[in-house]
Amino acid sequence: IPANRKWYRNLVISELLAEVLGEMDPQLPKADFDPSQIVIE
Image 1 (tube, rainbow, N blue to C red):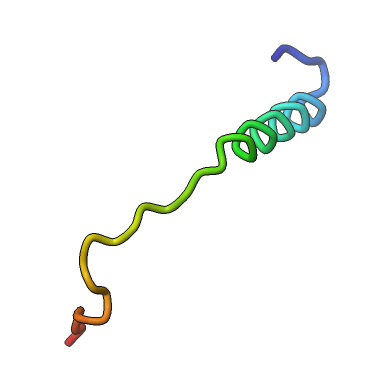
Image 2: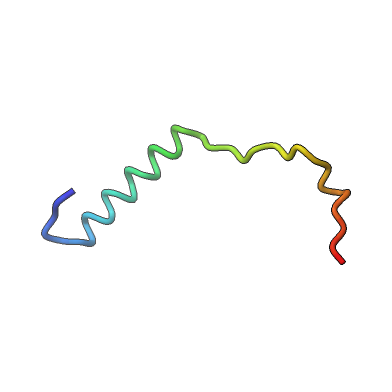
């Protein structure tokens, strides 16, 4: 996105990314192990 004002370019890109990520509804993957069984020494 070309722009003479970098702040405006950054604003447009940020809004676009926020909209697309909101539509994608990304989710964290489910753990395939029991986290309560992890022991840190």
